[in-house]
Image 1: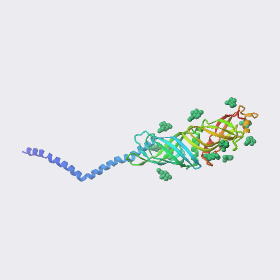
Image 2: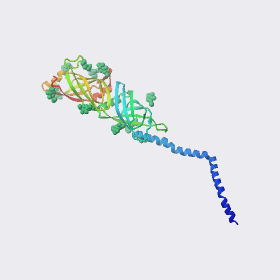
Image 3: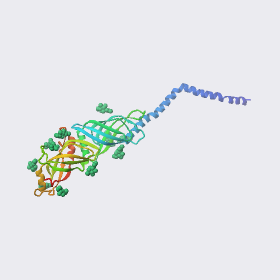
Image 4: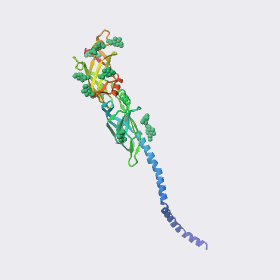
Length: 330
Ligand SMILES: *[C@@H]1O[C@H](CO)[C@@H](O)[C@H](O)[C@H]1NC(C)=O
Ligand SMILES: *[C@@H]1O[C@H](CO)[C@@H](O)[C@H](O)[C@H]1NC(C)=O
Ligand SMILES: *[C@@H]1O[C@H](CO)[C@@H](O)[C@H](O)[C@H]1NC(C)=O
Ligand SMILES: *[C@@H]1O[C@H](CO)[C@@H](O)[C@H](O)[C@H]1NC(C)=O
Ligand SMILES: *[C@@H]1O[C@H](CO)[C@@H](O)[C@H](O)[C@H]1NC(C)=O
Ligand SMILES: *[C@@H]1O[C@H](CO)[C@@H](O)[C@H](O)[C@H]1NC(C)=O
Ligand SMILES: *[C@@H]1O[C@H](CO)[C@@H](O)[C@H](O)[C@H]1NC(C)=O
Ligand SMILES: *[C@@H]1O[C@H](CO)[C@@H](O)[C@H](O)[C@H]1NC(C)=O
Ligand SMILES: *[C@@H]1O[C@H](CO)[C@@H](O)[C@H](O)[C@H]1NC(C)=O
Ligand SMILES: *[C@@H]1O[C@H](CO)[C@@H](O)[C@H](O)[C@H]1NC(C)=O
Ligand SMILES: *[C@@H]1O[C@H](CO)[C@@H](O)[C@H](O)[C@H]1NC(C)=O
């Protein structure tokens, strides 16, 4: 007796329970949907926000860190005592999957490890491997001593580190714009003391020119770097056997990459030179005279009538030695 109702009850019970479970489920969500939405959004944000605001900036900064910068050409023209024009082509190296947009930014330019000498506006660029950036503008020298150190290092060294530092904004696809630190040093070949400097096709000018010059020739100025510099009107000091023998003039000197052939005139004290070759106890009786070429740090480079101290100082730091066969000239 008691079994049958129990059995029928057991048969009947599951259906109402299933319905009420589904209905309770629906009812629960109808009532509490907003709690679930808040929880879902909170969980999403807890995961997404660090990814977007911590992970992505970190990855972006790390990729910026890994990128390289090469300077393939640099033309410095129109120098004044406190400014110069630069036309520089930089190539970005980047071997990562994404190519963010870097926005234009103001960068401090310096000799690597030294104080900044100028501030340049680096234009916007998409950071793909091989992307070129052209910086073509007039720059103010913000620190004369830092710029002098840079020009001197560039003239004297085989390699020079040019540092570019700034905080550009960066954007990748639909992700938010972030700020990264850009701190890159491009290693450039320097002028390396004009190694290989020589003088060819030289001869005496007799009678002397009206400006006093009595010697002329072609200076070969090798430039191993990718840079071009306008040094202006350059005066070099000549000495032999420890005695000042004259000055050389290189007018409107522009040193481009490669070997530069530059017309040169000089004022040479012929009395002293003849004495060095033919005098009693002459040190160079064979006529091969070693000439030491220096420059006056005070005024070796003059451009548009103004002394360029940063080039004058650099030229004065560079002592060059050549041997001239003067036996047939005198
Ligand atoms: C990027 O480089 C700087 C120093 O060069 C370092 O302090 C920083 O931790 C690096 N950032 C990343 C994300 O690698
Ligand atoms: C930059 O120069 C380095 C060597 O100084 C070279 O390994 C690299 O391939 C160059 N990158 C580009 C993009 O030219
Ligand atoms: C760069 O600096 C100049 C002057 O300080 C300012 O006018 C200009 O808006 C700056 N540009 C950027 C992209 O920050
Ligand atoms: C740029 O990086 C170099 C070497 O990693 C570091 O010595 C220099 O202090 C950094 N420049 C700035 C402005 O932080
Ligand atoms: C001197 O005069 C000669 C002949 O006119 C000229 O070629 C040379 O450039 C002049 N040099 C200087 C320093 O003015
Ligand atoms: C410059 O001249 C030197 C010596 O004549 C030569 O060895 C060198 O290859 C030349 N350089 C260029 C870039 O022409
Ligand atoms: C050349 O040098 C000698 C000896 O130092 C000097 O007496 C003479 O005046 C100089 N000549 C010229 C043209 O400067
Ligand atoms: C060359 O220099 C030496 C010392 O360095 C000196 O004794 C000699 O007199 C000089 N010769 C001439 C012609 O000036
Ligand atoms: C350059 O300065 C020196 C002094 O350092 C002076 O003797 C010379 O006359 C000056 N030359 C010119 C062309 O101004
Ligand atoms: C160099 O000197 C000459 C003659 O004095 C002048 O005509 C020329 O403008 C000067 N060049 C520069 C770059 O100052
Ligand atoms: C110097 O020049 C003369 C005349 O041109 C020549 O006879 C002599 O061999 C040359 N000396 C050297 C070392 O080249």
